[in-house]
Every structure is written in structure tokens, then in C-alpha cells.
Length: 214
Ligand SMILES: [Fe+2]
Ligand SMILES: [Fe+2]
Image (tube, rainbow, N blue to C red):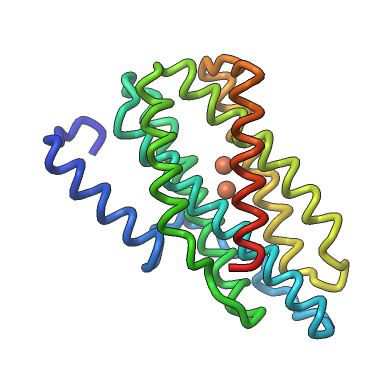
């Protein structure tokens, strides 16, 4: 598969297929089980349940954005090794997407209606990062993952201990994201300039604030 040659038109079609799967269908997951499997549902009152569902919606949208970033980067990244390295990470993000989606439904809520807009925005940013060159592209992955790890820590702080299912998912995601960041740095990722990091933080703030409600 690695050496298969895709024409630009193939890539556009594949990209479309992936976007539709991410937004409306079933993502292609790895062999790993859902960390919430085998854990019993905790006792949650309606208010806590709803708050957690809103947080899981944010995490689900975060994973939609991760897919879009990786797809955008894969389209423009120059080195084939970078593309290959990102492939497994992108697949693990699909696990996260599926786990968050299932948890969101178990908690009786829905995916964000804003996901297509966030997908498009993140895809564009990912493609731009890929065009900037592989060291920036990998640096961008590392910084994104660092910010996601911090964000997940905040959610783990807020989600009650009784909700072991949501917590197990977020714990595993945190571990994976940390590893993605390390891989990206080891692959040659450069530290991003301060203003870019700040812009990324602001964009994710807008995402979390809006998706909490919609
Ligand atoms: Fe993820
Ligand atoms: Fe990740």
C-alpha cells in the first residue's frame, strides 16, 4: 500500500470519503478496545450527566478537528516518512473519535452541529502546516497534542469520579496524545513561534465555548 501512486483526483476523492466518514459515518478504527468496555455505568444525576455530555461533545469535536488536521497535512506534507508516521496517529485519533461518539450517545446527547465548519477550518490549517514544510508540520502536531493534553487534564478534573467510563476514555486519550507529541518531536518537529501557539489556543477556546452549547 505504501508505494501505491495516487493521482491528485484520487486524493481529492479519498479526502472526501474520509471527511464524510469523520462527520457522519463510522471512522476506520484500530484493533484497540474502547476503554469504557467492561466498566459499569456510574450513578449520575441529570445535571452532572448533561455537563459531562457537553464535555464529551467538545472532545468529540476535538477529534473531528484532529482528523481534519491530519488529512490536510497528509495532502501537502512532502516527506513520505512523515505521511507514514502520521498514518498510525491519525488512525488512533479515529479510535478517540469512535469512543467519544459512543460515550456521547450513551449519555443521551448528540454530536456538535458545528462539526462540518470545524472540519473545514482544521483541514485548511493542516494543509497550510504541511505546505510550510515537514519540521513545521510536525512541530504543529506536537504543539496541538500538548494543548490537547492540558485540555484533557482540565476535563478529568471536572468529570466526577463516579463516571468511570468517560474518565477511562479520556485517560487513554491523554496517554495517546502525549505519545503523538513525543513522536512528532522525535520525528524532527520544530518548536512553534509564540504568536502561533497563542492563535492555536484562542481557536480552541472558541471551539470549546461554542461546542459546549451547540
Ligand atoms: Fe485524539
Ligand atoms: Fe493525537
